[in-house]
Length: 293
Length: 159
Image 1: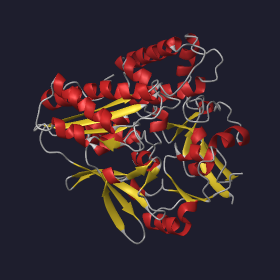
Image 2: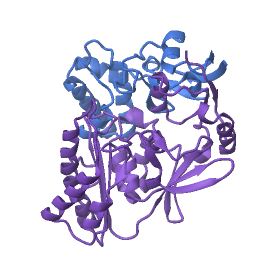
Image 3: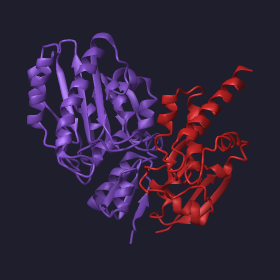
Image 4: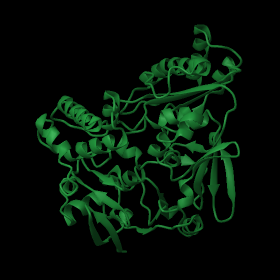
C-alpha cells in the first residue's frame, strides 16, 4: 500500500534540510510526470515526497555571466515559449518541442528529465553538445559538474542522496553556429525516443555529436567529432563519421525497436542532423523546429 | 498523514482532507463528482484525464491531489458558467465524437491552443492535439471542427 508523507518547502534551504534528513527514502517532486509513474509501478517507494514546485528561486530562466541558466522548475512549455532559449539554445528549443505532448510539457521539466536519467532522456543530447554544467546543492556544499560526467548508468547519476540539482547552466556561444536535434519516435505525442541525436557545429567546423537511447547513458561521440574537426561535410566524411558512431553506440532491443533498427537509424539520423546543423550555421536554414525526419 | 487542501474548482472554493498518495483524478471523480475527467491510460499518454490547472492543460492522472493546494482548476463542467459552449457546439456539429470518452480532453486542449495562438496552422493544431487520443473518429472530424472554430474566431476578430 502506498503511504508517504508530503512536504512543500518554500525555500531551497528547507528542501535541502528535508533531503538530508530523509535521504534515499525521499523523492523530489517537480512536474512529476516520471516520478508519479515510478511510484505507481512500484519502482520507487519513497516515505517522503518533497514537492519543490513552490520554491521560487528554482523557477529561474535567464542569461547571466555568459550562461543561460535553466532552473529546476522550468517546464518544457516555458522553454518553448522563451525567446531567450529560441535564440541562444535553439537545439534545446527544438528538442523540447518533441517531448511528449503539450499537456505533459506544461508540467514536465528539463531538469526532471535528466535527473530521471533514463538512457532515452530527451534533453541529454542537446545539453551534451552545448557542454552544459549542472549545479548540485546540499547543505554542506555546492558542486558544479559537466553534464558529460553526470550520467553514470541507466537511471543513475552522480547525485547524492542529500543533493538537489538546482539548475543547468549552458554556456553561450559567440559567433555563428548551427545545431539540430533529430528524434525517432513511434508517433506524435509519444514520450520516449527510440534514438535521439544532437549535432552542434561552429563556423570553424568544430563539431559536437551526442546520442540518447543507444547506450546505457546518453553519450558524446568523440571519435566522430575528431574525424570531422575543421572540415566541411562531404558524403565520404559523413560515412567515416557514421562508422565511428556505430563503433561507439551499443543499443539494445526492447519493446520499442530492435537493435538492428536502432543501429540503422543512428546512421540515417546522423546524416540528417549534421546536414541541418551545417546548413543552419551557414544559412540559418532550415528553420529550427522543422521536422528533420 | 492527512493534509487539508484548499483550491478553486470551476469557480468554487473547495476544502478537502486528502492523503498525500491520493491521485488527483480519483479525488476529482470519486469525491467531487467531476466525471468529465476520464481515466484512460493512467500514464499521461491519452489525454482523457486533461484538466486546466492555472490556465494550462495538465494530466490529472499524473498528479497527487495534495499538489493542487492553492491552485485553480477548470474542467469542462465549468464551461457553461464561463459561457464557453462554442467549442462543444462545433464539435457536435462536425460529429467529432462518437463514444465521447476523449471529448472533454480534446475540448480543453482546443481551448488552450486557441488561447495561445489565435490563428493556428494545421500543423499547430495537430501538435496541440497530439497528446489526446481518439479511437472512434480517426481525427478527421475533430480537425475539421477545430479548423471551423479558428475561422469563426478570425471572423469575430475581423468585425
